[in-house]
Image 1 (cartoon, rainbow, N blue to C red):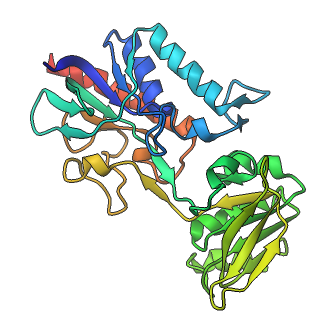
Image 2 (cartoon, one colour; image 1 turned 180 degrees about the vertical axis):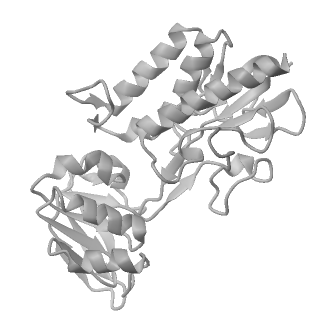
Length: 314
């Protein structure tokens, strides 16, 4: 027998937990399926669970550890009556109301759904890469650039995002090495010109990062030439991976409208998806900002949109 909820939230990062706080305070008793701890794509707490110190979230002038921040979000939602299930959503049916959601061995129905499954940074797939995230390896220059003031660092990627991150990091680093697999950049011409003209940026053409050095923190990388497979060391204390992001939307394929890149489409100025009663917030529909604070803001929007929609229905 399926259990029924007014509001069911899929995902428990900053967006999902903020939506939970707001809907709980509206006496909607939100039920959050928060993901599973062993997963890299939908773990409880989202990407901030892989982050060490967060210094740019308002209200914490001395910074706060990512997992602690998400723990506080969760406690606040629970305080107002939100309930949680630590499990992974495996299937959804949004073709009729009430909407249906399944985990491995349970079924749930809901009057409304808030999707906040987030996105994951594409990684290099190196053995000790995950262990070094937050200890020299990062996927967010605006989040972590400050920690590398005066350091020599590297950025992997050749698109606009990689070049933008490299340019941004020159504000802090003594030197930025841009690691590019090909002999050209994919970035727009104006971004290419800026990178090439910047004295702090050294571009390594036809190169890929093949090994990371360091156990407790990053101490250097090995570059492999993509033409002749020769290798050479590069002494850096920071590595920023900027090869793209992938939204966690596989279970919504052919269910919700999305861009070719997989990001869910929402109506301008709102969190409404193409299905009435289904809302999307956070990085699952935002490929521009991807910050904890913007995700939390859109989670608030989703909660208010959802609350007003439910009031109209009843």
